[in-house]
Amino acid sequence: YSFCTLLCFSKNEKTNSTTPTNMPTRFRKTRKERGHTFNGYGRVGKHQKHPSGRGNAGGSHHHRINMDKYHPGYFGKVGMRHFHLTKNQYHMPGINLDRVWTLVSEQTRKQENKDGKVPVIDCVRAGYFKVLGKGLLPKRPVIVIAKQFSKIAEQKIKAVGGACVLS
Image (cartoon, rainbow, N blue to C red):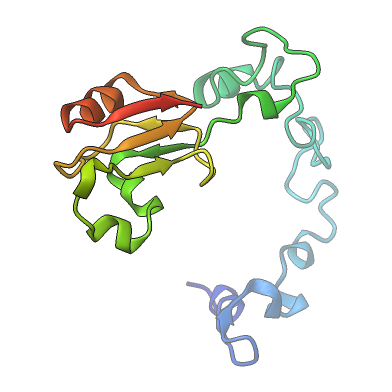
């Protein structure tokens, strides 16, 4: 390394980092270029501000190869347009079977099925509209109330002797 480079990347005590900002002016490239008209950048090509445009300019023109290679699908459209999209009609929070019993109180979970009473789990009241089939249920009949059930969830609830009620 030259003396200039070592000075340039010396440890800066104030900021505790190696930064090229503490290089003295006398070692900069422009000092050596004085008197040489084009400063090493050439008369024809010239050293200009943003020769290929700023930012994403030229994505479909002179930078197309880069865009196609590293960002496929960046340009164009896909799918149908949905005017005045309201998300509330698609609002369908789900809960898996392994978490359904957490919606019931502790005493309901512990008490046995006496007098033929079966615990009722109202998922809609807890804010879940759809019951999904991940996980296992305890071998105990239960009535589950929801707006929708997945096929597997319905099979598992009926397998333990329970019932699915649509609300």
